Length: 108
Image (cartoon, rainbow, N blue to C red):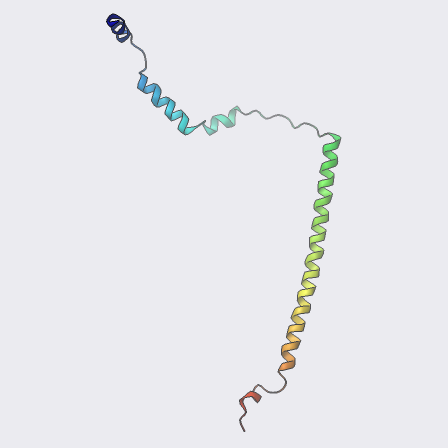
């Protein structure tokens, strides 16, 4: 057994065990290189849509358009309501102020 270990020590390797551990740790920490992963991804031509996919896309677009119209109408109604509230508030405050601002001083 003693002779077997001396034979293993005589074998020279181009790398050491510690360099393998360091390399393994570094590769786990950094992850894949961003430029390498981007260049290895191949782009495929987009597949033509099926009839069902086209129908679903048209339905989604119609729903989006209906929502946009509903939102515009809702905003218009809200703005009108807000103007009405402002008018009522201003008319209430202006009706309380009849007369001079010096009436409250009671300077008799």
